Image (cartoon, rainbow over all chains, first blue to last red; front, side, top):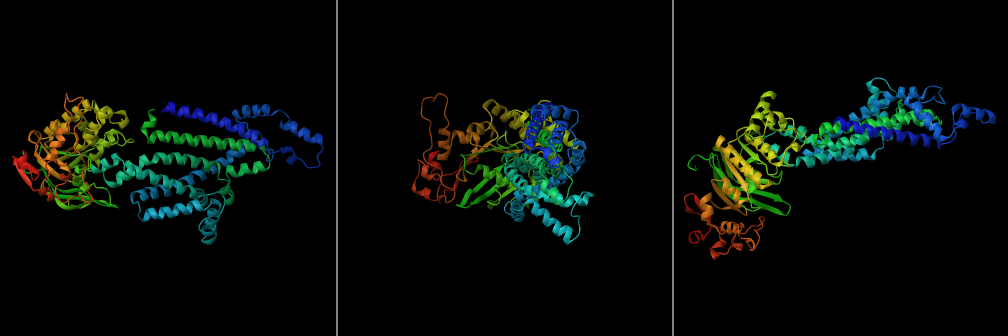
Length: 305
Length: 327
């Protein structure tokens, strides 16, 4: 088990290094940050001095080498725009991003799993039909629209929940639903089809023939088997929520990494972009690692390989 | 042995499967009894209704499609067909009647430990606390000869061999001391040496527990080595039943005779295998008369009506118009 985790962690480190290279190069394709930082009528000598001061006059490879070696010591450079260490800017925002992604994932799983399981158990019944309608609605409504509707109904209409910002748990509810809404359909379907397969399996039939109560049969013995494909999917969605919550973050004025990185891209604030994306990729790799570890917990056949 | 009150008595059982293309009369008027300590072999080819008969006892028929439409199934005198599903699930399945599954490779849950699966029945409807259920699981695994079971409770199915898995499946079945065991092709998926061990195990377990066994098989060799009596099933009905020696020595039904003749014998190498010409009839709309008539070498005009069951020896009866002359 530990060798397995270590190997996956090693693979993850390589992925992160690769991501850092790509983001370093790609961000520099977007243009020259100096032209945005200096007034249009600045003398050429001043522009050149600024470029030298920021190290942007050196060859790309040298710049990358400096970035990586500094990054390993925890120095991601200073934001061109905010004059603060980029790392601090990212770390300030990290908890908000993780909090939102975790809440959204919990929301989607807690809706999708019961619906998926019950749809399979009562195949063709009313839960199954309701689930199918929900799935269709989920896929048809983009999260910016869901977000706006939630604000309109629950914040503006009823006034039950705050419309924006980060604070107590009540601030988390609407953005988490907006972000977690879309994956519900896919998760529900994968749980349903997995459960349908497993409920037809020899071991569930035998277990039923030996008198195992139906509730245990479904929620314990069958569900753990159906959970393996769900875990794979959760890993992908969780990573996407960590890195791609930009739209929801903007709608709910949520102070997450996604929004900050996009703003930094527009400002060509390279250190912030690099630090932000690098942290997103670290989160991505970590969520995949978590999925791999949880496979091992759920399915013993993987653990022993 | 049959003089004792039977553990199981089935009378006139009809189990139909409702499909879109019609109603399949999978079990169509079956009578049989199993005594305590007796092993009844239910033999026949695929689709003859032998597994459906077994599943009817536990009422584990295909959901929504399979239904017992007539007949009675009595377990120690208690009628099972009218028992509410809840009571059946709680008091009968796994407790008084247990099943040994066919394929050991797919019959154990791959993501739960053996300890969990074997002790499950003790905990969930034996009501034993965890520690005692664990001890009971170790005990029953010892009875099926799993070496040092206390060390292996945490292991998962993929860490056991096929033969061991079949023993574990058997342990799950005998755990609660059932009165009747339904063993559906328990040796089919095993290789021959393991088959022999499994047969020996079943025989020993029966001697220890005195349970009745219904052995569902298409393998006449396995039936011969394990059973006291056999019932030959063809197209949803039992065509011949009797003590195993008697049926093997003096088969009275032309189908039984054809089945026995179809077993390849030592020294028959190079000769053509004997096969029964034709196909079993469709069970959606079976013929009114003898169901074997279309393939029978002894067919006469009387066979257009279903033959009455006649005794041809002690406890040996057959459903054939020409049984008397054929023996």
